[in-house]
Image (cartoon, rainbow, N blue to C red):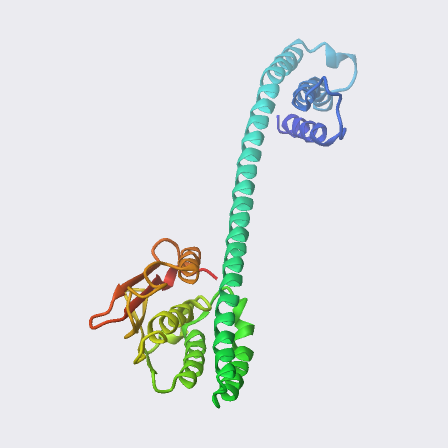
Length: 311
């Protein structure tokens, strides 16, 4: 029986591959099942001859053996095609599972690429938003003939040399981000030396945690533009970062005009884009909130789960 099964398997596999194309009016599974059925009788007869006690006419006169041969052929014809049909059904199920898995992987890859594209688009929106505002500040200094114009321009050039290579990165570190923030605040402090001061306080170990490029800088720029710069006496910006329960918390607090000033009452382009970027990078648990600061000003808070960050 082993030989018969082997021959049926070979026939089943052969007609699965050849011919490459069949007429449209016949299905391949019909050919495979038919091939299995047609393989049983000649294989059984060949085994009957090869295993007989002698070769010759007497071989066909042994009625008990002939009856056994007939029974085996009938059983083979009854069982073989059904086994072949069962194998076809299992094969179809395996192919369906494989296709479903392939589609799921392809869909996941497409979703990942779409996410990357959306992030790239949002970063492209952030870059000119920051650069144009900074260049406008330098232009104002030049127009007023301020002696700080050249040092600020030099600082801006040095800042851009460090910042531009990181702008297209999907994810950086908080240490890199704070380096850009400090460079930006240094420039702003040179523009208004008597009206802006700042403090940066990072909890040890947080500088190596993931941070989307320009995330904190967007909040700092918003605080300078809408809080400190319009205020007659200027103000102070405090930036802190801490890690609690696997969640990174970053606050940007300013003592400027507060949420009632123009542009801070709602989420503008920069802040709304930042909120979308956080959701794409860290999921729905990432948050961005703005609240009034006691004594005047705004407290902007960023938080996201460190362990769930995506590259």
